[in-house]
Image 1: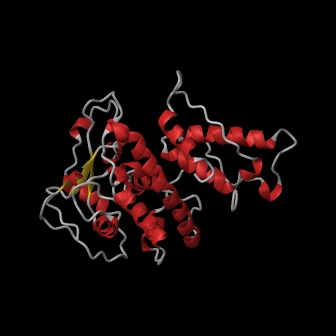
Image 2: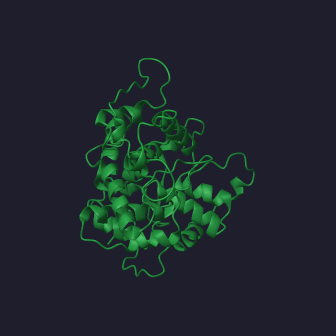
Length: 322
């Protein structure tokens, strides 16, 4: 977020769960009422969402901020300067729990079809599309993907969510298996590291994926994320879709389409995105094959798009990206 100093972002990420002791988060920032615009609130929502804060909690934060601005009967911001409300040029607070940030599949395809010569917009478009087709993974997990995560036999990317790896309740969590679809290959060809001995994408180049480097990794992820989300809002404005567009939309759009449009079972969807299946006794018997996973995800592909890339068995990871 451009409104917060870099140290604030670092502290929020690394200390957000600290509740006692010397590591409790204590941030003092000088934010004027005139700084609180629709963009400021949208950026806040994106930032909190990307750092794992639930939308129910974001709603509480925003309603508290609105109450402060309203100041009883003597509001600090009025007229066009008042950012909250419904409709164009206003910020809508998440209501009744989680705010819906899912796009229709047609809007996903509009983003994929978006043409521009601006390299920043091209990168944002492609990263968004890759995240959606890759089971709706989040940006942090995308940055951490490595070529060794590619399973050439199944032609899938096999990985664990960072959030899942950090959970101590389950010692051996099931990995996410994302079929590598043609648009994903094309995006890796355009933006991926050419040397296939480290990260797939260059956002964390030079930073080893080990625990002691986690703070450096998070800083690099946030540094890369901000311009991508800003560019996505430019794309959204040009396409006439949700002005709050960010990478956070990919996961919700993927899950929503599978459940609401394709009527895929809840257990299958949870397995595809790495959610816990809880105590559901049938979950252990539901083990979709690579063929079935590919069949499902292939139904997401843009029917008007002619993809020019395909996967071939080859080389180091038995998967050529060309």
